[in-house]
Length: 127
Image (cartoon, rainbow, N blue to C red):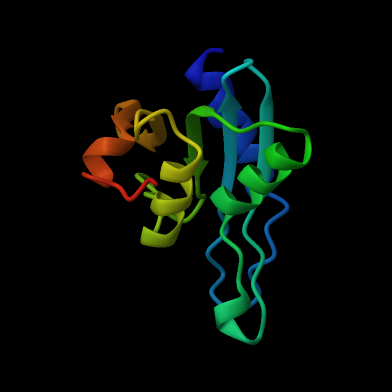
């Protein structure tokens, strides 16, 4: 799949984010090893610790349909470019990667930037 298309799906997902407190909307789209895509958006809660990030929402959607390996994730926010995954999401992405090998696709000034998860989470914890 073309990473532009993956980022566009993340952008569409961000439009459905529920962020009444932070106003920081995020959408994510994961690409699984069988080339299927699953989207998610962040949704906040007045008990802030219960907020779910877009990346974990998208991964949860993929898991429902039996996916276990993710090749890439696109993350988009209308609030900022280079919307990197938080630490918790980096660890969850690691859990569903192939030895921490996963492309992280972000919007940047040049269009699209791609980094490897291993760059963002070196020596990620995997059993």
